[in-house]
Structure formats: C-alpha cells, structure tokens
Length: 165
Image: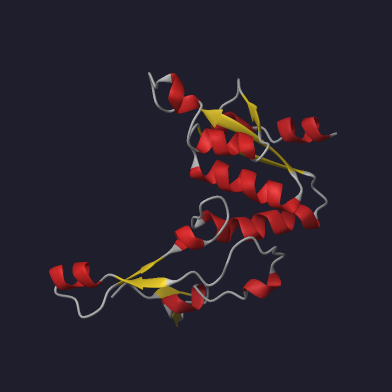
C-alpha cells in the first residue's frame, strides 16, 4: 500500500481523505449520458485468470463519439458559462480528441469555439489535416487558429482577452 499522507500539523491522514470532493460545489452543465455502462470482459478475464473484469464504456457518453473528456468539460464549460463566456478557447494536436470534445460541447451549449491546432506529426499526408477529428471539428463550427503554439498560448493569456474584447 502507498505511504500515508501527513497533514500540516504532522498527523497521519488517510490518502482517501484527499480524494473525497463534493462535486456539487462546482458549476456544471450536463453534456453526457450518465452513467456510462460497465461491460464484462469475459474472454480477457479468463485469459488473465481473473474472476471478473469489466471495462468502463466512456465511448458511450454521447458527446461527439464519446470519451472521458466529457466529464471534465461538464465543469469547464459550466464555469465558462457562469462567467459569461460566449466562446471557448482550446489548443491541442491536429487530431486532438480534447479539441473535438470541446468543439462539440461548445456547439451543444450554443457557444463559439476557437482552437490552436499544433502540428505534432511531421510529414503527415493532406488527409491527416482534413479527416477524422479535424472534419468533426469543422462540422461543430470550430475556428482554427495558426501561428501560435499551445505553450505560447498558455504563457500569454492576453491573446484570449484581446480577442474577446
């Protein structure tokens, strides 16, 4: 088992204490179909000599072909709306699942979405830039921005402030 955590006053604290969080305290919008199913993996369980084995089907969240990022976006988009945002800004690789999910969440909530897509695959064919998540991004109405890296975007929040004023 892992090491016990220590509180500021030196008392031992259960590691689970830090994992308990009341999610009701955070602004949230519903984007997914919850709960997603657990599916038994009988063949793999037999092969691993496990009594039972299940897989969590987050591909069934219902938002843009699904994914675990829907869970996080429920809180991020909820907070953005709470703060009066009309546009979501994000960045990621050209075929980013996170960007696809963000674009879908924005479209679902009636928000605009802009993304910086970084070139992380050298020598990719043209189809790489026109299919898959890129195609879905465009169907969701995303505006792609070039000439900036995700690292540069994170360092300079002034880009987003200037764009929206």
